Amino acid sequence: PFLGQARGDRSILDAGCGTGLGAPFLKPHARVLHGVDLSQGMLDKAAARAVYDALDRAELTAYLQRPEAAFDLVFAADVLCYFGALEEVFRATHRALVAGGAFAFSLERAAEAPGGYRLNPSGRYAHDQSYVTGALAAAGFTLKELQVETLRTEYGEPVKGFVMLALRAG
Image 1 (cartoon, helix red, strand yellow):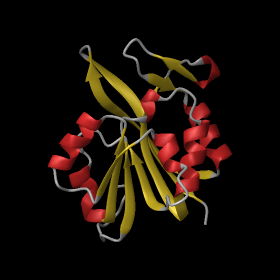
Image 2 (spheres, one colour):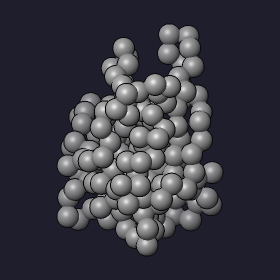
Image 3 (tube, one colour):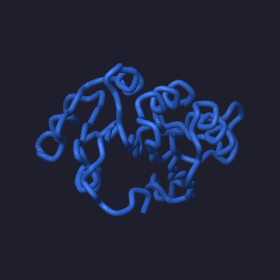
Image 4 (spheres, helix red, strand yellow):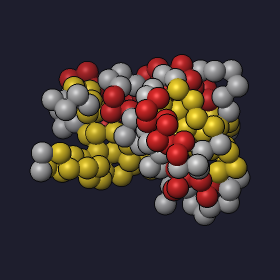
């Protein structure tokens, strides 16, 4: 629902693309679909899908800070949970988006997180909603939509999280 009707006219970055599970969903919206991930093994699996126009092995924040980065959409599903502090990656994402660009992402929800986030036994971070919305605003984003969803099941229990859409002002 965040992306609207598929028009095939956007430059999209699948941030932390992994094996490319999101690519078939994103491609109908893309003029150009880029993927970036730290793992070459994951990128090899994503390449086998033959959906991406470009795949790069890089750390996400550094990739977003490249001078040539100019995306209409940065999509980050199940990747920001590997970041504790979000300020730097949010600023880099803002910089990498064109005016009016969108940032769609998911994060695990923390019921209590002194300082805004906490590391779970799973090795993933969970974030407090007010911390996330504050970090988005500080980076220059306007929060357009926030939904609380079950992101996955872990140890037989649902993992609740945020699915968010933020816009870069014009």
